[in-house]
Length: 374
Ligand code: NAD
Image (cartoon, protein in one colour):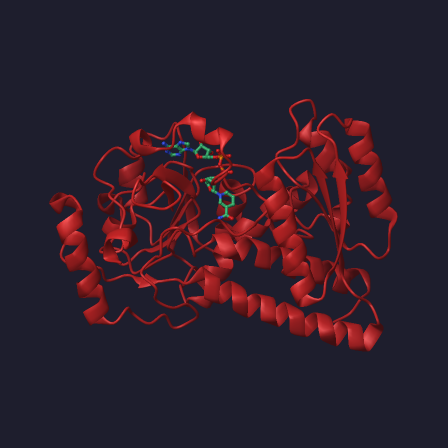
């Protein structure tokens, strides 16, 4: 239904964000590094994925837009949507299949099965869901999962002790500590305890440092930015020599995404909360990666015609028409951007599914490296 396809960006996005009371009732947690499929109350314009990206058939596009015209603010309903939609679900499925094939090949040749250990502290429902989803995804491709569940009041020492055990366990090739950790714990101490050779989340400062250096490569690239790059590559978006803008500079998404684009020879600007004229800077970009956490921040007027847009943001907004009472939107106003951009990821169904696929890929890479399997 077109009315559920398009979101209304005309009102201030933040005023439509879910109130805090919603935090008491699980729904859509703010997405954190560790992945898990988000609920999908809203279907995006369903186009396709891998290179080259086909366009939505014109008849469907027009039907969607005309239905939107009757339900949305007329000011936001522009002439036509022309962007190719980058289907992250489809690309992620292809990657999971590729990983599964490689794992079978490695097992046949060496008898080794990659192993991923996840440490969960506390009983946050969203974290439990993510961990469950990771486990399922591992099983589906043939990765053995190991799990440790600790109570909310566990000590930092206990967590580090489990990390140390996994660091020494040869059947474990990847270690992931589910974030966020309880407040009394110091994330840095804990993440630093993970062996850089098993840091499949790629959050260890040495991995980030190596990512930043010319002529060095990290052992692992953080999953979400790696997924963004994979979407660009597999969609045939040229990066070399292009201008890129990354909006957001977090350690887990924005900063590594900017470093990756730079490594791929883009000229990169980073827009953040203190940037003056973000719109003007963003409008110069051939490639935009938005990782902010502000619903519909990036409007059509921010976008250079033909730009490729990767929207990492996952923001719940109230939607009384949805059975759950909310729906998820990105940091980019999809209905405006899709009329200006050359290619764009939807939310949901864009970057989200890629994060877990990249985790599986990182775990496989780790097992291959440790066992010197080519
Ligand atoms: P964060 O809060 O750690 O960082 C947000 C960044 O945005 C900060 O660097 C801040 O400077 C910048 N920022 C804030 N307001 C801004 C503004 N008005 N203009 C420009 N920059 C602004 O968030 P994060 O962890 O990087 O996540 C960002 C978004 O991506 C969130 O919506 C999150 O849910 C989503 N996310 C999705 C996935 C996924 O798998 N799809 C993974 C991680 C994060």
